[in-house]
Length: 364
Image (cartoon, rainbow, N blue to C red; front, side):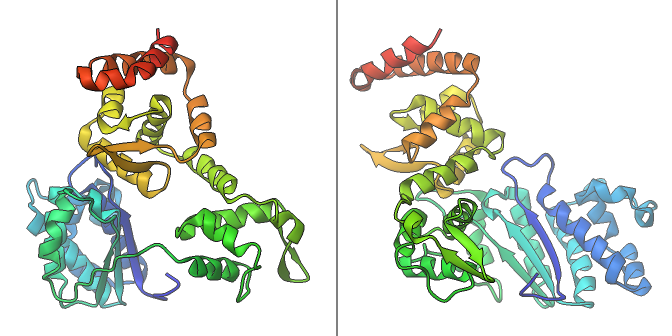
């Protein structure tokens, strides 16, 4: 909003398992209708009610409670093309007021129907005063989600641009941290420690700087930020990073929380199959959950003998997450992991006998 000033910004986030078709676009419909009510003219509202209002009530049941839409009946059946046309109708009206910025975050979670609506919407809005910004993680090798399959078609549309963000360099991290203090350069002793902890991730650098301020290592005096030089010498990037990760792990949703708890409990040879067997979670959902945890640096991944293996990036994080698992759950999970390992083929099982004994000892 800072960059686009008075533009009309509609923002939504895709969810891995939406409760209904096109659920991710409900926020666009609701925000767009609200903007039309606040900034539009009676003539624009009348055009909307005569046109695409019915389709948007299909996308967003919440709009049904609006007094202005009570008499509008949503269609019983509507395909992606019809709904895209109705959504585009609303965006066109908003574009007569100001530039419209549509933001779709975590687009890699968009399902097939949402991708169809998205493609149709882009075609409908090709000549309007609209910017569509989508964020997604880079597809992993062999990944074939609905969104990534739709990218080749989206890339053929006029005005399409694909930006791939790379990790920041150490100097860039230091410059960003310095800007948070209102300075051009960062303290020479602090800069390499911030860069080492962040490893190219600006969010980690930001959280570390906040943590240092809370500890008094960064302090404000005379209207400027200063660095306590003696305290900086004691800062250990690995510990600062783990403290940040522990705090982050405590605010995960249910799926992500149980996945990282399962990983902490399994400890060694943390594979997709082991986590899936333990949690009995839908494989597609688990795939995206693990991808998120890797992207957020709460899990590390590597390949051992051609198989993807996960690990927690730090003993403190592993111990903290493990301690949060209720005792009854821990006992049942250890038993289940032991049974899973014992059922492995002979040549694989022989290599994990110590792990089997460990989990049985802590199971029922």
